[in-house]
Length: 313
Length: 245
Image 1 (tube, rainbow over the protein chains, first blue to last red):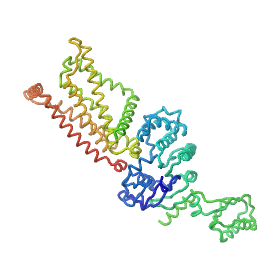
Image 2 (image 1 turned 90 degrees about the horizontal axis):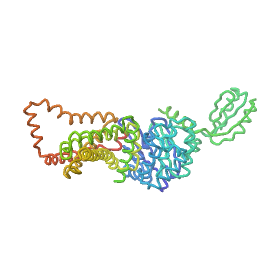
Image 3 (image 1 turned 45 degrees about the vertical axis):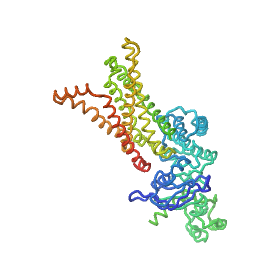
């Protein structure tokens, strides 16, 4: 397998007047879960379609596993699995028949198909229900089956387009855990689009943020949090007077202070020392119950990015 | 390639039989079809059924209505049920998908034509046992099968082309039904409107017609039409267009 699984250079796709993907360039190393984050309509699905060679770019180029998407789309599809916007399951057919069909499509021999179907259905907890038509299943079960189908032929890359969209929180967590376990077992590269930031934070080693077709940021979740949010200090206590907060805001290591009832959040510049800030608050008569140091969540980073972009507009 | 085409035919058949077996009249309607053209009509015609090109042509023409139901669903149905994009994202080539869809329709209609022919021969032998074992003449039997294969191929190619261009399976079915009504019913409706002497001459011409020559011309026309329709379907089959439609 090549060290870089996916590479795009100024990838652009225009639909009449809309620029769905606008000159994005990024690289996805092999063997990681890569999160492609963005709000609805930001160009995530179009990017997947471009990478699978289902759409041709208006300009720019993309390579998947070293193959150009414009000229070697068949070679790419041969080596990739996909769970797209819809599950793509044949609802009149049973779970087993759905996998049997795609097993035949990928030329797995009968014994291999049987074994693989058993292993994957067992892994996602659907083996006992393999003889049921999938039309009557819940969305969560269908999503799990579709993930199993995407992994059936041991692809080198799996594209998952919002795999937990529309699932209730319990089903989403279950699918996420099973997805993580499957990915670990199979050792594939995963290109995952989502607008669920918690999901990205738990699953992805690298994430990219896209908005209105443009790439806003790329890096590991930790890098993004540090780059965008910096570290922060949360203090729970009593006696947060305006005077105390005002002095706090004047400290060189403090970027921002927000207050909510008996709880303040201090956003710090770089990796500042926090002990003097706590001492300062105590000297101002604040009674401190709890101090927590942490980083902004990916969700906060994402929202900040979206807000910043709105201000620029 | 052939393997991929058979895989797609397997899936299409699985789906159509599951659909039929889930409805109250699904599989029964297939039995009615075989009963009508394999039992009832042969009984009406008697031993003449085994030598009459007209009866053979009727029996061979009818399976196209079965093909119609299957092929209109080919792309429009997959698009409607959101399974098309996943299929297009698979390793299957354009040609394999297109020929798989056409092949499924052809195999479906042709199988029923073959079953109907055999049931017809069995019916005649049971109902009219005198004179020993009887069967179609080889020319009639193989000619009939070839004609059936071509009509099914024509219908499947036309159906797939219409299905490629239709938003839903229902719309595709409606479009093709109109075409079929015009082709099948128009001559039947127009014939009684002709002056009586003209009707007589048409009937005379039909009785004295050289069926062999007619079948040969029809076969050539059908092959040409099929080639054109497959060419059009291949030109129309573009993954990007199918996804954006």
